[in-house]
Length: 173
Image (cartoon, rainbow, N blue to C red; front, side, top):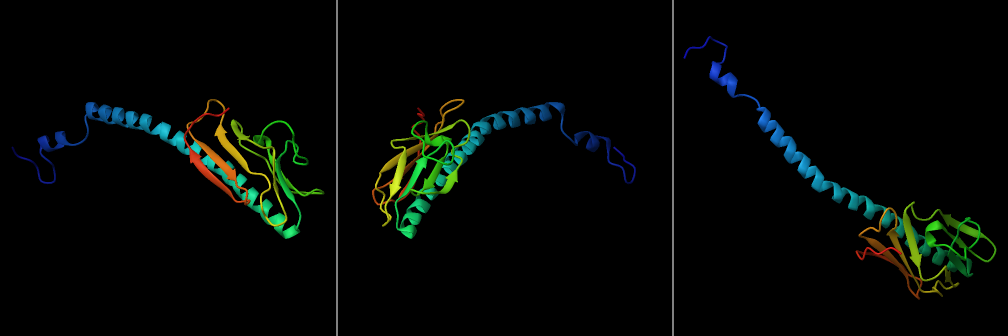
């Protein structure tokens, strides 16, 4: 077979590129892989929101403890719907504040929409030496559109130290 200088033989030109079958197979494999990866991205987003809300609670408790020591007074961290007073109904997801007996020191907007913060108490007190006079356990979880597979449990010990632990019980009441 002869070819002209600078030109490829006819057979060499036909071998280049992808066939339609190869391209369709590649697209189908990519679609399956993307379908498998989508739930993972959803779990990452869920974990990030839960971690953010739990870390805000932990840091809020640490600041409340610090303020109690600094002011030599009892400082209360409590759930609040209006960011001005402690609430007696509802949950922590509506927001929380830090206050002395006379003033509100800090406030937080609470959990994102669709998330809950369940707790065994409505307020946590820190005395002037920084000891938590109220032991508390708060669970941050996704409630809507369905309960998520992850939760964050925030615990405030009798010594006033706050910690957060990830759990996978997936029950959000």
